[in-house]
Length: 118
Image (cartoon, rainbow, N blue to C red):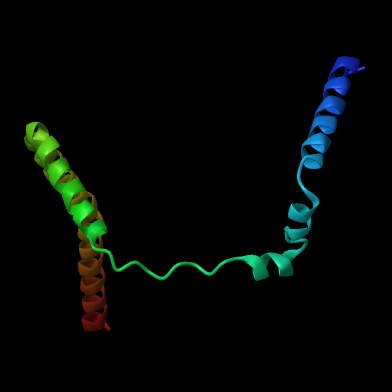
């Protein structure tokens, strides 16, 4: 067999210990738990109103200032990386633009040649 008796004994022990843990919960607590979906929505509290506290904005500003201070030693590398990213992205976008322009010129020239011949 694939399963040993030792493994099945362990599973039985786990089931028994789970049942015993539920036995220690008082009955009034169990009866107050929601039974189905309708009970669950009835006992769910409404979310708190949105906070008007501005500490979140202040914390974000503090974090950005701290990040700016930490990045000082690597600032030239960060700027060089951003510039390289801009250049490579521009080159990547330039190729389809140039191909489209060449095709448009060829189509216009072919249509102009066809209209003057015909």
